[in-house]
Image (cartoon, rainbow over all chains, first blue to last red; front, side):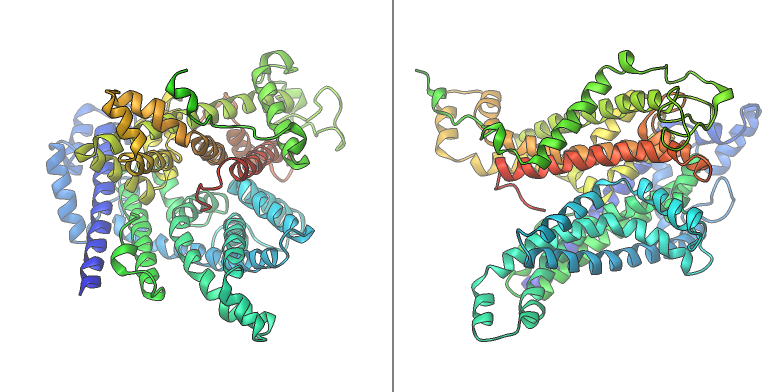
Length: 314
Length: 292
């Protein structure tokens, strides 16, 4: 019962954070300037601008606009794009799966690569391998995503001509963007996994397992890894925002038609309803993943009580 | 002898210069060199960064068929790459330093104020840190720059958003944990003002952690600035920023790779050096700071 209440309050806080973000963005965007004037050509007659303003509801007081917008959103109506005249919901639902696909495959590659290298470094602590791996990891996340992407395009598309670097027609188009997004993340995962692994390997139960003759591989897989999984999960909760930020840049470089590219394009066209829709979606993804991470943490780690676990974060 | 003499002084360098590993020395030399180049941009730059020479477009760097007129080649408008890199470095480093400082100072002040005042202010401050967690700075910055307008001041303020909430949490956490400790009660009992308590007695506790946080945050600030400029939302042409140069060079990858690759290398090595230095500093100064 107590944990149910904790889950309820955690959920409430997630909804509240989401609402707060969305409201803030709405107010800032609507007070920032007149999209009708910015979007229409400069020689447009004033009465035409005025009619557009009325058509888009921009002439009403801001709190009324906000209430209307909220009501529409609750009915699944995110407005219509100023530029393409298509419903924002269609644009967002079209592009979001591609971003999720890119993000998920990058997350997968980064976890596999980062975890392996991080554990390898921890097991060879203090050796040259350890230092080289960690230097590589720092290099991985120090390098800007856009530079990494451009290097990969230069090498694999323009020089070797083995991988495509533009658009999203086939699955091979996914390879370069995934690697671009995954490498910096893999660097951070590796460092994190190394620290977590060193911490776990120093605990008494590992010594006990070794002493009773459990094989090296089994010690790592059965005893150490499950204990690394929990902090790693929390780590992913923090990283999800960075992955999405990276996706904006990655999608722009590789012409990957996802949410990030939609955002950059809409921002260039000052397409207010689309920008609002995309920001809402991105905030929702981040808030929901944080919620999910917290709940999972409480479920898989019996040591922490629900109430305490759900105390922090967004 | 006054009472303050007993306070442990925050020690920034705890050993002789010899104790610094070679790698960290190299990092510091690189960072120092970048600072000097940025400061002396007007003096050492061979040409002005906007000087065009359309008869000398796409000249390759030395070693790839270039000559000493343009040691790092020229770009699509025949502008000298070396000169542009020097000025771009100045812009990017300046924005990153000012942005990091603003973020650190404002974040810390907000955190202290939230911890001391509690109540409504604390609630709002914590809600804002929640927003920062749920909506990464890149998204906030993209939206602001496009709709509120782009000028240098606005841009620097947005770049300074990167990581402010970490300083705020650090400062607020310290106030809450030390609020009831004996020394704070004692100085408050002696009639110290809130400002005195915060700046003379609380701040020294976390100054080391704040310096470490700022060092670790600096690469993120550079990356935010260069990403925004790369997307065309930051520094505007004809000015030069490392990210903008990379974004412009993207179109000429096939024929003139150096336009994009050289600024990319400068960004990467600088952030790498700063990250390595920050890690080392954290291990040296502040073993208690979280290892997240």
